[in-house]
Image (cartoon, rainbow, N blue to C red; front, side):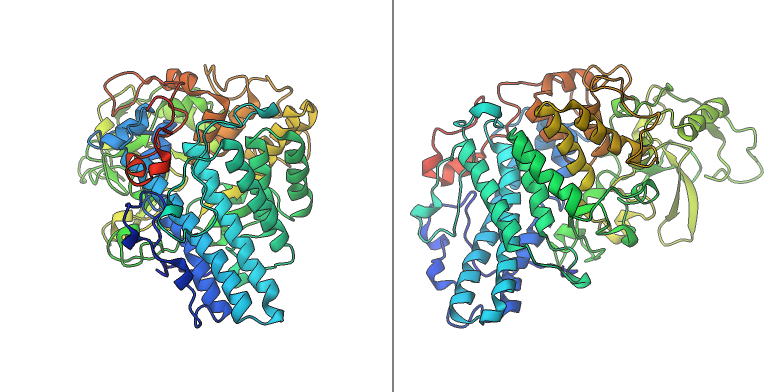
Length: 606
């Protein structure tokens, strides 16, 4: 796809949160004049914002991950408590004015709008300017627009829908989200009540089915590699079937992706380095849908720069720390904004790390004749503890994905160019706000984090974001088989993902395999994941990728997760979870102020 995708403002139709003012609704019968679009390039220019919108501030550009989903699942542990919306996400107790949920609602519907505009433009172009030979190219645009519209509605429904569908028709009549199937032609059309959950999922499924047909014969050149394909659509379709517990269709669709897409799990040697901006790993053999992110320094922090949809800036919040310039944890330096978000300690033992907390001792090699520094620290991690920790890593006593996802103080070393000076190796540190707290692990994020540069110096993330990859397909296929009564096949596909984590051939049985669907997992003293390989593998495999929240909600794990994590730094009270409301985010108050037909249709409990 185009390496830089910019929003082109062709029409402003505000669906989510628009005001009741006819002047703000552009008549779309005047959108496509006799001169636009007249070329395929015009049509693709209209489509491109459907991709670029994913990088908006309200979505994956910034707010959705570090300030919403990562706190909601307690992968992150916010130290900063001055943001009420952020605190509400941590507590899983949102208000109808929560800015994070409101931003997501608005941005997701903006994405729907770009797709609807594209589909109308495709019809106009085909009817007025296209040649017969351009039919396949126009259909490829339609296929992408339908996939992207389904993707946006998938997220809207799973975040804001009243309840997930269940096998046998349970919850079909629950409230879904408003459906806008075309660009509103007048003010009345901007007013939509909530469709049923079944109608929303049917719309998503139909869009994806049609997308696979429209993209059937499309093969993108290398310059367009980031565009969605029929296999992207089939993978998301299979996921929709799993999320609606349609096990039969899920099995057929996902097995088609496994057998015929040409995709597979990437080897562990690539996997361990696949989330940190190595361009050699982009759009690899495991990737089915990936958000391209340009390392584009606009001088004003990614999403807020001159090209707001060219880059993202999640890493400024979840950056790891390195030792201070004098080699201490006190004053340790964040590779982004300091004092915001660390890793919740409970995640360390959940990955199977068996050791307790470390202590600092006098460095026997300290040279008092030289300045104290990261190369010459006065105090270091207890060498006995260090030896044990290295053995855990070497012997794979803990899940190896622990070290794919996180960095460990004193043992991991980051090669950093600090403030324009020469690059040098500096040990990872506890965050400075945990210095002096002995009963903390203080690990930092590695996956999707700045680990070889200071993000404040460049103002952008440099890693692509995986939305769909084959590990998800394998585990969804496992779940579909288990749901359909085939435990053996389900277990085998769970084990394929586990084998990759341990750098083993994925199709060969191993000593690391789970022997049953209730086998012990690496999670230590964990009543939620300790004896459930499917749940554990989804948690461990997609840690810090924004997927676990949806598993919590569809499996109703909220109270158990709250009890497991216990507390959060930005809250003064223990974590709790209200099952009658917290699995769904509230429809924003702004929507009720703008949309008369949604009156009385708030999610329960709000």
